[in-house]
Structure formats: structure tokens, C-alpha cells
Length: 451
Image (cartoon, rainbow, N blue to C red):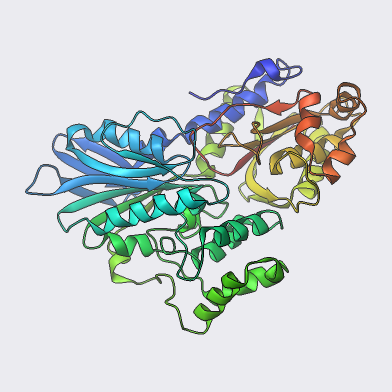
């Protein structure tokens, strides 16, 4: 069970209620909980249930030549697969999942491959191609659980003809540093891939399959989660081009990438798999866990503590500094009312400096500047995968003393400069405000607690 390291935090005891709420949210969206919401085995019967609609698929195990298999990719895929191994036991015939480097594994019947994240590499292409080969080898006697979570857009990146892995890496790098939201970023990436946008689902045919999704995106749209390897995609090449033009990054992208998108727009390349496709329509996708589950668990935990929570169901999005300042202004007001705000979402950062940090640290640092000098009020911004940007922190929890501690402990370092240079990690490390968990094995966007 993942916990936040209290030993590295300043004034951890006073922050305990907020830390406990974050942990309650994290535990509610564990990969094990996600699988348990959807999959049960009673005797020789396997039940796969949609947590939203309660639609149920029933399959008899050990009937004829049918095999049950698991494939997947993402930060939560290994633990989802391990849970399926536990539920299915000897009825599971095998499979493949792809995870980031450093992901621990207790898998026995399922092969683990390693891709790269957040930027794809040759290893990502190799893992993706192996997953495609495995999918093509399956038959109509096979039933496959497809487990996907955040990170799979990069971990199994197989470029379209005319592209190289370096082209996909450049696209991801440019979009990540330009403040493009993940849903729009994945629209572009789906149209440069031979595995996303439903194409892996077509490769699985004639096997039957059910997709279990652990959502890291605000809207929980299946085509956006992991860039939708086994689900239909309503977006188009034209929309992908419009996204890069709105971000004003066309000239920063490899020429080959623009050529592929233009060829698709002009009908010279096949589109991603569209809604209504007969193969994908007959093989359902279920939302196994998302930020709503985390937020509900946090609200219940707050009530159990005697705290009156305000639950914001609309996701927090937009520029990290703007969101951070808003949360910083709100915190003291909530304290005066003995209230506490719980929210989820995913902010964006336009990278202008070369420092260390991530969107949650950027959000928290902006909140700390707004709170500076206030005696009451805290803001926590937390990445549920345990990794905020390219740092070892999951985010930060700040208060009115943070800016002062940064100046004193950081040898004159100022939060204003840290924000401007995207260098919030050393500043918040100096103030002992960083949230540290290590890799959590799950990923459902970011969680916020204010009050």
C-alpha cells in the first residue's frame, strides 16, 4: 500500500489530515481495486462487469479450446495483470504487458516488456511491435483482457510508415513543453501510430476481447486514455493538424510528421478506426477506475474525520500558475469556513526555463506565493503516479510559510525565479514541502486538496 513519506516533510503532523485524504484517494484507484470492480470468477464462470452500466459478460472457463489471455501497457498495467493472474489462476494461459523502466513485477504467466516514458524510444517501438505480433497470432478461440492506463501512448509507440521513433519523440517533447493538454496531444499521437486509435483492436481479430481502462485523463474518454489502442477514435487527421497549428508548433516538428498528417488529411493514408466499426463494436471497453473514484474516496475519508468537504466534480485544467494562484487565494477563505476543497484534473505548463519540476510543483509554488504570509491555509497538488515531471517527487503541499522557508533554506532562492525558470523542485525541496511516494503503480491524473 503506497504511503506518502512523512519524514521528508516540514510540519508533517499539522498536514496529516490532507496527507491522509490523498492516500485514501490513491488507494481507491489502485490497479487491484480497478480489476476487482470489473472481474470476478465464481466456480468455472468468469464475469466481466461494466462498473458504470452494470452490463455483464459471462464466460464459461475450460470450455473447448478457448484460452484466456492478458495484454496491456501503461503505468498500472503490471499490477492490473498481476491481479488478473490472482483472480484467474490456472485458467490464465499467458500474455504480454509493457511498463516503464523500473517497474517491479511479480508476474508468473504474463511476459513483461519495457518501453520508455514520457518520451518514446526504440525500446517503445520494439515493445509495441512485439505486442502487435502477439495480437496477430491469436485465434477465434481466445478471449483477451486488454489492460491500459496512462503512459501507453509512449510505451508502445509504433510509428506510421515514413516516420522514425525519433519523430514520435520529437512530437511528444514539443507538445509536452508547449502547454498542449493531454487529450489534444493524444489526438495527434493516435494519427502517427500503427497501434493506437483502435489499430491494436483490429490486430486482435478474430479473438474476442474486453478492455479495462484506468483513466489518467480529465474527460475519461476511452479514445484519449492511453491513446485508445483497442477502442474507436472519432477524431481525424485534420483535427490533429489543427491542434499543432493552434499551439503554433508546426515549424518545430519534423517535416516527416507534418507530411504524414497532411497525407492522412488528403485521404492518402487510412484513418484511425472509427465508431461503428464491427470488430471494435463487439468487444467492449470498461472504465475500471478514474479520478472520480479517488475523489469520492477522499470525500468519504474527510467526512469520517469530521471535515466538511466541498467536492469539485469539474476537473481543474489550464495553466498551472493560474490554477495555483486561484487555489492559493481560496485556501484561507475555506479555513475560515471550516471547509476543505477536494478536486482532480491536470494543469499544463509552458516550459520557458531549463530547471527541474513538474506541473504539480508549478501549481503548488504559485499557490505558495499567493499564500505567502498567511497564517492559515494549505494547498496540495499531487500526481497519482508518484512522478511529477522528470523528478522524484509526486507534487507538493504548501502553506503561508513556504516562500520564506525557500529563501532561508534555499540560500536566497526565490519562488518567483523558480516559477519563471520551471525550477520548482529544488525550491520546494529546500522548504521541505515535496510529496514523495516513489512509483505508485497507478495513474488517474492529479489530485488537489485545499483548505
